[in-house]
Amino acid sequence: MVTVHLRYEIDPDKLADFEEYGRRWIRLVGRLGGNHHGYFLPSEGDSDIAYALFTFPSLADYERYREEAATDPECIGAYRLAQDSKCIRRYERRFLAPMFG
Image 1 (cartoon, rainbow, N blue to C red):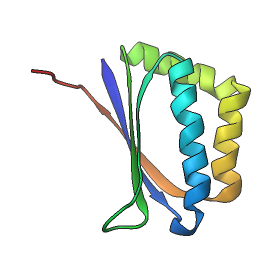
Image 2 (tube, helix red, strand yellow; image 1 turned 45 degrees about the vertical axis):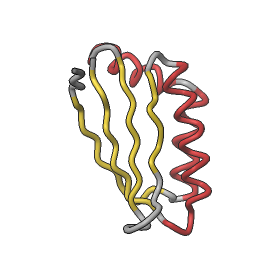
Image 3 (cartoon, helix red, strand yellow; image 1 turned 90 degrees about the vertical axis):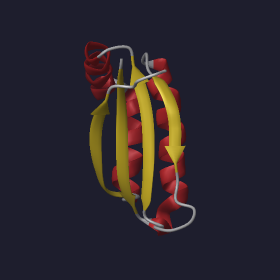
């Protein structure tokens, strides 16, 4: 199992655009075989940092998701939303191995 942790630096004036971006990806990750754990938006403290977590059964499954997402029209549309609105300034991606119990 692999969990992807994303840290976003967002434009706080474009939070509505980022929320729409997140809603799209939550559904798309699920459709493409992952389990999305949600987006975590700014509340108290930093107003320009957001997070997302999603899990795939294996790194190979994640890599398959990335390949499919690169040509999927809905995924391309979600990516373009972020590009066109400039709601994301930058992001970092980490791969984590969850531990239970």
